[in-house]
Image 1 (cartoon, one colour):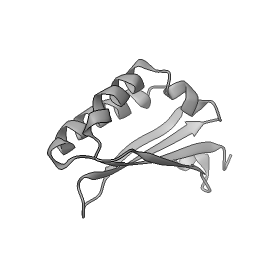
Image 2 (cartoon, helix red, strand yellow; image 1 turned 135 degrees about the vertical axis):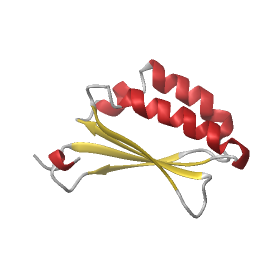
Image 3 (cartoon, helix red, strand yellow; image 1 turned 45 degrees about the horizontal axis):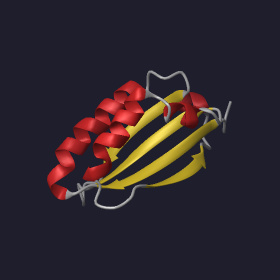
Image 4 (cartoon, rainbow, N blue to C red; image 1 turned 30 degrees about the vertical axis):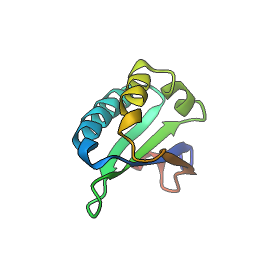
Length: 104
C-alpha cells in the first residue's frame, strides 16, 4: 500500500574533528533502530563534498513510530552522545513516501 510511511529527513553538520565519532555513534543507533517494530528503514548518508554533513533517512510505519523511537534507550544514548559533536543544531523535515511501501 503506498503512502503509509512517515519519512523524516534529519540534517546534521558535525564538527570536523568529530566526524568519525559521530559516524560510529550514528551507525550504532541506526542498527538498533531498524529492529524496532515501527521502523521500516533507517539510513545514514554522508555528503561527499562536505563530509561534516550527514542526513538520517528514517521511515516509520504509522504516525506513532517516530514518537516510539524517541523513547528507546538507544535513541536517548545517541542523542546525548552526539549533542556536543554537532556544529549547529540538527534540523528535520517530515515527508511521506510516494513509492510503494514494499520498495523500501
